[in-house]
Image (cartoon, rainbow, N blue to C red; front, top):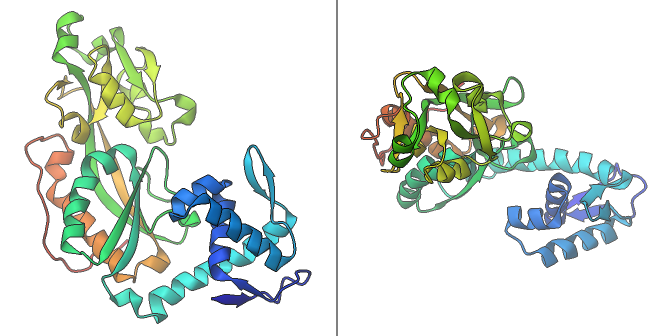
Length: 328
């Protein structure tokens, strides 16, 4: 598909290939050919070749290339503004005019927090894909927020609800976090009888400056004076470190309960409740393949509310049809 760019007065062409433009947008957003290649599932050489072709069509370089990556130059910034408008239009065309919005086929990208995606969502998505075999799901699990404005995903599961923006969102579920330890650790260290006792122990936690949300600051609530000799940006790393029996870890119950070696410490007192939010851009709300996954995620969360709150024996599997539930 070729698109006219009459407004870009100083450029040498009136038509630009949309596929090349889509690659340009992705490289601009990630500042990296490698990351763009991973995101688009295209090899790096193809990305580089398409960029050179686009620059030839434009008649100008679009990036400043350095060891730090690809940075848009002045021409690149001008093209980026128009390309984003076209991308939004293309998404609307796909959703409303192409007939695709009513067909349960195609790709859906689901972005979620690392631990929830790996320990809870993935197993349920396997059932979803088995039921909807014409829908392909990309599960993106990252220790940071998914950027919907950069089209990293069609649906995001976040620990914060967006306060503004062109999004549909709803509460997905509450979940509980508890302090966990191995039996070996509890046998070899002073007994923990009160929350205050936790401050006398060593814990693993998040790296403060890389903590992407205030919702992750568990230590401030449970053990503000405890020693934290090991920190990680990854909740999975914290889970694995806790399993070594050398320190305590504060973990979501949907992670801690999966291991027979981890025991909740003061489960009635030392616990924290947080929430997950389900979010999609407004233009995706009428796309059937997105809506059916949205419905499924809500049904899975509703049926597993006890499990997410710490009842390890309450996990339920969902393989039923449901009406579209998308709402604010």
